[in-house]
Image (cartoon, rainbow, N blue to C red; front, side, top):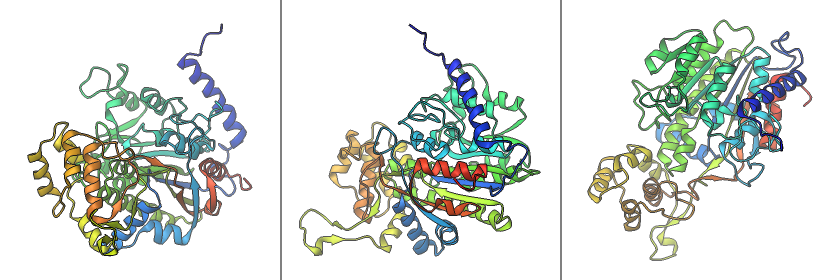
Length: 478
């Protein structure tokens, strides 16, 4: 009976496969840094978990509360192309971020949990690997951990998205020029306080040996002006916008600004920047509409930086704004004020007044859960509501769910405390959730610049990946 391949052997064969595939797909792209028709500068913005309703609620909030527009809608969509993308995995009618990002990066359907590996077992050569073959600089920017599924799918080829050690090792091997986000715990050697790494390798030191500059806060990031940069700004995921320490922790906007500065510096061959707001997905899992809105606003501000860049280099730049899937089945709707009657007089629909109620919320539901802990008390819950949720009252069944740490329904069950508070907010604002996890809803894709017309229409996420790879490789007829 043949012996199974070791992980090292698997990585070796994957490396060989990638090499041949890159040669087949990219030809002599090193000698032609900008193939005919290919963009020199590529921005891919990912609103993880952000469906059409997430975008529209954020737009309505900005319009009515802040009296401002939205770059994604007013600039990217109106001046560029708009498409609709399906998101299912190879082995499920919905998806996780690993399968979705693999399809978007590599152009093939993947099974749940797989990164950079097609469902048929082949290696999904990614658009970012093609960009590297062209000599472009690479950037991975996220407010999740830097080794989370979405950014990792553009660089890595591992059967399990939880192989964080393998993912970080692959980052060191491929050496993207800019890596910014959270997740310091997987870079610290095993045994060091705060480490969750499987071995004793000091990965920060390993990156520094490859001429990376390590930064750990907003001020240090703002000061770095050139060279390769590894920025790790939190032990695990970065903070929601509602909770972020704006003096020490950079936002997606701040990281995007730094990435543009670093990637564009003395760079004749261009760059490919992947920029993600994972917080939109995380907030949706917690049924936290206020955090969705605030993080979407910061994400849109980051897209605005790319739009300003595009205005300077319109014939060389491609901006794509997409989502990997929808989370939560979110939407404003009409609902009964209470269960006493089904008459029209007992119904309410969402209004601008409800947006103002959302504006009054002072913290994320993630922070609220942390403050109450695993053994919440009635007194602590009452104080939390007084301090951070003015004007909101908690129905008895949701108070019981929080105090007993019980799910509120079969589909809204990820975090009992956050989900009960989320339903409280829904009952006061008519913004309801179908689920606390991913749905099969199609998502929007907006593109502006070189090759943007390819992203029109209705297509699958694997087709999106093929389109993106073709654009970057300069294959004009694919």
